[in-house]
Amino acid sequence: MGVTFRQFLRTGVSSVLHSGFLYAAVLVFGCASLGYATSYRNPVMNADFPDPSILRASDGTFYAYATQTLDHGRLYNIQVSRSKNLVEWTPPEDALPVKPKWASRTQQFWAPDVKEHDGIYFMYFSAQRDHSDGLCLGVAFSKNPLGPFTDKGSPLLCGKTFENIDPMAFDDPATGKKLIYWGSGFKALRVQELAENRLEFRQGSVPVELVAPVPLPRGLSGDDPRAYFQLIEGSWILLHDGTYYLFFSGDNCCGERAHYGVMVARSRSALGPFEVKKEPILRANSRWNAPGHNSVFRDADGVDWMFYHAIDRADPVLSTPILGDRRDRRILLMDRLVYEKGWPSFFLQSPSTTFQQGPKL
Image (tube, rainbow, N blue to C red):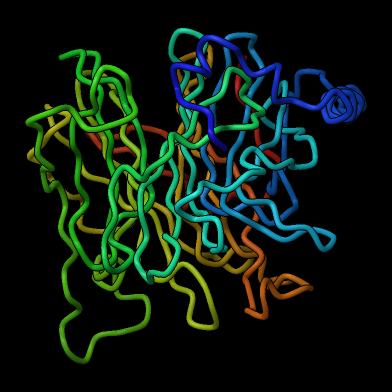
């Protein structure tokens, strides 16, 4: 779309939204149960919804965003769903129905993260550039958390492989700096400062490496904890009681050899250095395989809730391949984090399978 950020701020989003789309969205949302859920049982959304991130908008509604999928023959570039209670979610819609001009011919739109600032919603995502095998970080914006989001016109950062993926934006309360985390494709997780407009890097800033992958020693395989660290991705950072916790995932998200879990590192600074916990805090169990790529929401009681995807061993694969490729059906789960001895953890270190008390909102 030929809309600049300045034009967008002047005209608003209403000129590019279709009234029929809005009406349909209102109908769908109106049919959802809006009551407060006192309990839940995983999954909280039984649909393909990989790499989820959660946003609470200024109106109190929750929005979840996820990687591209195929549903009933339609490709959704960036998925978005809504909820009033974090347990009951509307059917996903497409938050990025018009592809960026630099990625107009590709079908790799991954891992969105959306943040709100002064009534504008900024979406950070990764996508494959046209005529290239490498992935890029992109930025789009909207005045509506549902979208449609408009790409800023050029990628934020590109590379030759998939090292520039999985962005997460974070405003550091200690310094006021606007930061973006990403990585890795067998490279380190990184962070760099954004400019005031949140659309580009701050002039003169440089990326800082935070956590590096560790090659697996020869002869080790299976569920050895070290296997999770050979490829790391999916950064998510939060501040809890004066400590920054950087969550990330590894090793292999998908496929017949899926082996994935959530790890964590901690620091007194959003820019590191980080101390890495040597074992994953979330890993597979007999029901849920390859849990990971998380975001975190803090409820009214100050309790942190992790949202992440996992593969249901009883229904692991999408019924229709995406562009001929077999895809795992990675669905949305939620579990409570607890902090013990300076580290976050989960009960039994795996996804819950029974009814749980839900978040207080």
